[in-house]
Image (cartoon, rainbow, N blue to C red):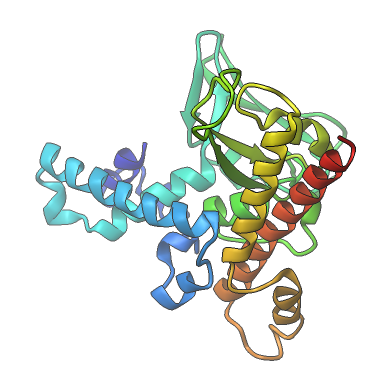
Length: 282
């Protein structure tokens, strides 16, 4: 999909539509100084990996379609990659799910109460928008309630929202150790915490083979604390930064970085509190 958009960005029947797609200010486009504000965060780590992946894919594209080198730059492929990440839809057909970029539909709003449903019509072969309730003239069209984490909204679309604590996400890795019992069937596990309203279940499911076991709960607590200690700032310090951001003239990207690293820490701290709560009941 990214290759298609890049190749058709100029001198194509798609050009008029593609010209409406902006360059999204995701961390992929940030300066080194701005990226430093994401140090020790999951998003900072993932951004570095994604940049390498994009460069690899760009080199593959040039080898398959050599003429792209004469008309396109790496920045064009980066733009197309971000466009797909920000605007793609997963459309369910009878056979499979399709990754799609749909003109008009991709301009719908992602906030507020949804009043439009988008689906693929297998009979007509078209993507359809249907109102789910009466829509007044001039009313915005919304397709979902914005419940994305700061990580997801910044990584995919280049923006963040204030007061987003209930939607934050974080991750932690726990590993098997030499003296662990044979009931620990997993060598390691990546635990992703996304729904902070279901923390008890999520923490209990973060195990190596035995749910809600004291040894692993202690290991999880230590891993969470170690990760929190790696950040250069605390949640309180990030709050103070955000309180004076406008007055001090901080850039939008820097504010977004602070919100993202704060959001990860808020999530990690809540998971840590829950793990320690469960340990106290043992």
